[in-house]
Every structure is written in structure tokens, then in C-alpha cells.
Image (tube, rainbow, N blue to C red; front, side, top):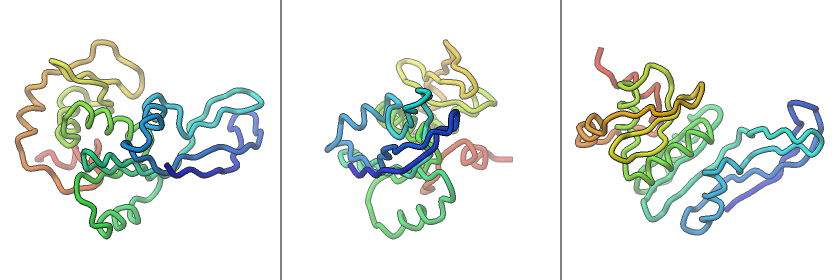
Length: 184
């Protein structure tokens, strides 16, 4: 795990303090860090003055060597990250996301044994607003981004039909990608 310290100001009270930023996690070597990531405990400022918790936007690379999966959080321009993935020559699935929540979603999809690109396309059939994958059983379960919606689920049949297709070679697989993938 690669970490660093950065001085940040609390957006609520303005108190300056140091915060730890996790910049790289290897799932095999740091399972505890992965659990903290999934619980929303990494790259969060806990203000020493007002106790406000604020997520910090930070670049982070997640690697699951057992599944040959790489995912990098890039809050800004993805051009350099895309070029770095192309030049690295790494084998396996390589993804770029813009937020840590999007990384958590990718990990949940990976853990469910599903394909992220097919999930993104199925989301468009379920709801016209942004959704996050939550879990899969006999159905696919979603979290509505604006609010948590209980009981929002969809059949796996649409996913299963899509998952038989050839996977895309794109690095950024998200809602915008899914919308652009639809035929006119």
C-alpha cells in the first residue's frame, strides 16, 4: 500500500490538518485496506475541530492480481492515466473511474463475478437516473445515487444476454460510455 500525507482544510470550519491519502492498494497484500475502502473509511478527512467527515478526491490505484484487475481513480483529466495504462503492458482488465465510490462499485461488480460494461448497459434499462450496483443474487440490486432506494432490483436476464458479447477495450466504463454505446 502506498500512502501519503497532505494538508487540507475542513470545508465546514476551515481548520487545517494533515490527512492520510491512500494512493495504491494491492488486494492480495492489503485485504484490511480493501475492507476499509469498501466501508468508506479511506481518504476521508475527519476534522479534529468539528468532527465533520469529508471524502477527499485523490488518485488511487487498486490492483487485484488474482483476477488481473486494475482500476485507477482519477478525479481530473484521464488522459495521462489512459496513456499510462496503454504503456504499462499489464494484462487483464484495466479501468479508470472518476470517484472512489465508482471504484467501490467496480470492486462489488468484480466480487459478484459480473462484467462492468454489461452492468452499465443494464442500468440504462432499469432507471433513467444514475445508479450504483449494490449486489447480485437472483436479481441485480441497485442504489440510486440521489437517494437510497429500497427494493430497486432487476432481472439478471438482461445482464446474462449482454455478458455473452465481446467485451469492450475501453478504459473508462461508466454511464456516459453506456449511453454512447446505445444505437441511435
